Image (cartoon, rainbow, N blue to C red; front, side, top):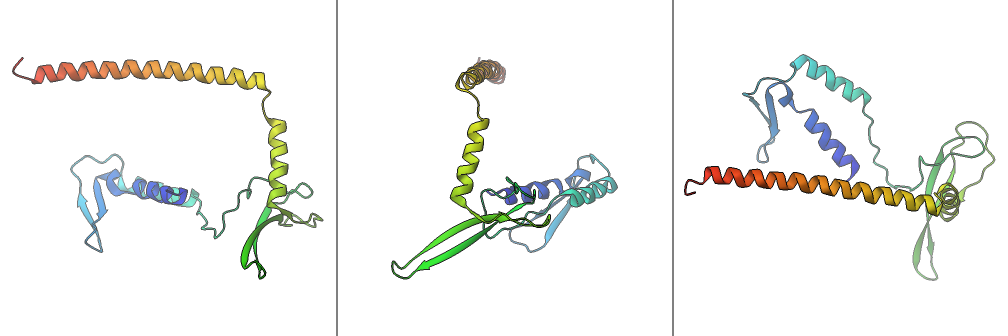
Amino acid sequence: MTYARVNTIVNDITASLTRFSTLSWRASCLSCALCCQGKHPPLISKKLFVKCQEVVKLKSRKVKNNKHLFDFLGLVKCGECGGAITAEKHTKYYRRTNRKVEYVYYRCSKKKGACSQKYIDKTEIEKQLKEIVLRASLPPHAAKKFLEWADKDANLEKQKSSSIVSDYQLKIKESEEKLDPTT
């Protein structure tokens, strides 16, 4: 499921009118939405709900439906002018081999003024980013220590969850004994 679809589902759930004792849903066989009065007490007033939905609508960002999803957009900026990096996809057809090859190029958007930087292809930007990540990575002894801490935390969580599960199993067993009239 894509981020945009999950975001839409979450917005639909939070925009539901069940917050103030009215339930709405779309029936699969009908083209109109049905609305029923709920029996539970409202959590918030309708006025407050509508006001909150207006704020959510103002503050939420619209997700662009990009034709092409480029790997490094928003991750890097131009080293010369500090402008955003944009990407372009070019397709080249080779008649001799009867095949198409797609090339991805990144370049400065030049929105912050004049910039003399040329385009850079995807393999080159990947190489540069790998070098940066390797410089910023942990030394082996520190990484080993972090892994030990993670293992220790995982073991503690496992012990906690197993004790909780055993408690629930005991409670279930006790409840079943109380409900069973033959014992």
